[in-house]
Length: 115
Image (cartoon, rainbow, N blue to C red; front, side, top):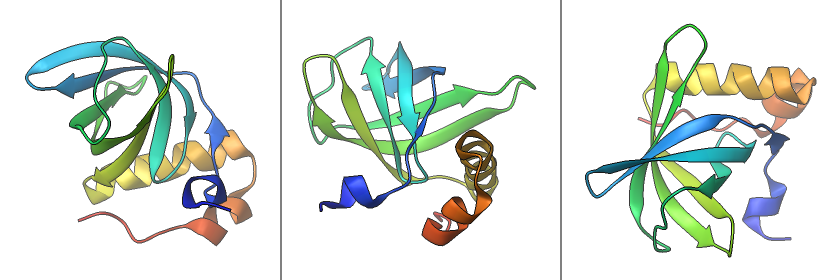
């Protein structure tokens, strides 16, 4: 089983922005994990490209995550998170825990926060 399938992924539909080469485009998430997201991206990005994943929460907090394009299919772009502040990691972890409905699943696969 490859690495991307071992991670807990939760279905999550959020409108997000992806910043790539100075441009910002709208995207829609399909799922989230502690280490990445699957999106329908509005603008194409090549595999390996570095970008910023921006998710604005209802309270106005913006989660800004450094990411790399791991895979591109016809309609989907898989992102691997490469860095985020500890506060962002905590928000993301809490979101995934709520969406999964099982804190034990999240805790079992938790990784060290990005620096």
